[in-house]
Length: 363
Image 1 (spheres, helix red, strand yellow):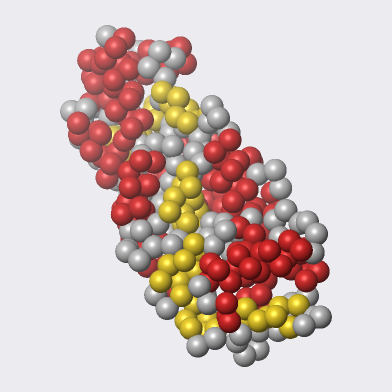
Image 2 (cartoon, rainbow, N blue to C red):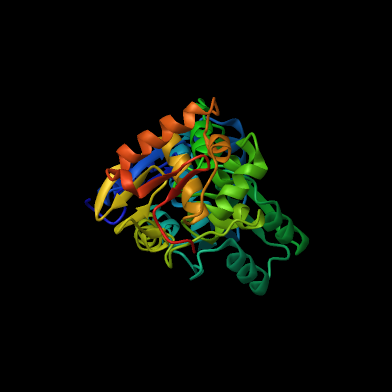
């Protein structure tokens, strides 16, 4: 075993920066299942962005809100391609510039602009409160969107008397191939994933929308899977569905991985069976410090036996737990494979004419 996440299976839903996140997880020993929930569609040639930019540079703007670094940079890159970069810079240089967080602040400065203020929480809600306190009645406010509309943000400003110009720099769309995401969701529901990571709120919404059995997915995420979001905004759709979400103190991918590496091992189920120490993983067990992979069918049997805490489980109940069902001999096959995987046959006891149990005292 190498790394704090050795033996754990982590689901990754990110599209942008997925390679970076996967590398960080694998460096800590995790096995990764990648099912991108979205794809980013940049809009350098999009007529809507072009029209919004022309509208913005047509007259002075009082306030500009930069919600994401990638979006703000992409906006200026598109403007450069249209020959509008200098006009865009002039339109914004006299404005109150409000980046949502440090990365957006860096993009603002890279564009040759100076920020007025940025919220410590990195949240749109705090940005909105700041705008309302400073007063926006009669002011022209540009809001750079981040993949999806911000109706509450925009409508609140409009109700307060602002003239809002929305800048749709990029948009989120479903992945071109839904197969990897559907396989990841199936693995979550089947108990084959220890933790599921999210780096954007649209990705979280996409996973919930894509699930063929919404109830089964939510039940698994509430009960069996550690759900980790990079920040409060990302966690929003999940929390609204009643799913607990672990978040790092700082909304950064590296911080999220460090939090995951601390939290997940601490939650691992530890048992003493036949004088041996066993830790559970979604697709493996650790026996006396040795990582031992377990295939899906024997793992389903093991989970059922573990839930019984040493009590006898009938062949019929074990058959019902098998992913693919089958005849009663399928249970005997799975038990044999489980004993081989554990490397210690005496850990699983046969109780004649009744079923099987783990060699542990009942809880």
